[in-house]
Length: 101
Image (cartoon, rainbow, N blue to C red; front, side, top):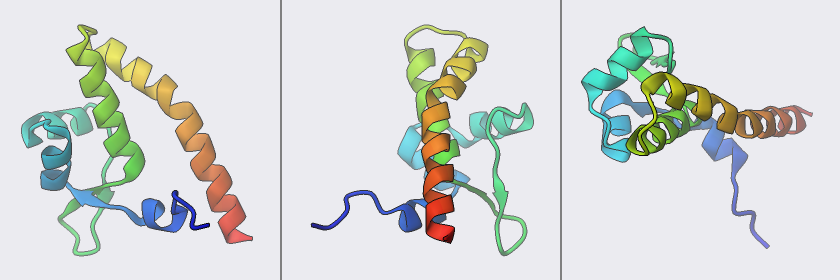
């Protein structure tokens, strides 16, 4: 049976800020603000200037959006998102370690 989760694919997923905006509905100005504040982190693109976001940061944006829509402050939403991401990050590290073997 084929695996539903493809770690190799997900670990290589990179989206531009425009792609993140399209998927999450959060405008680029707000995403840049969140990055400036250290809430999310981009990776430098291979071409230099393009900022790219990985799966974990995209997921974090979605969590923050969900929590702020529920009425939480940005600060509280970030804290809740970080807590919710702990198992995701842990699984990513475990999968990476097993893939490297």
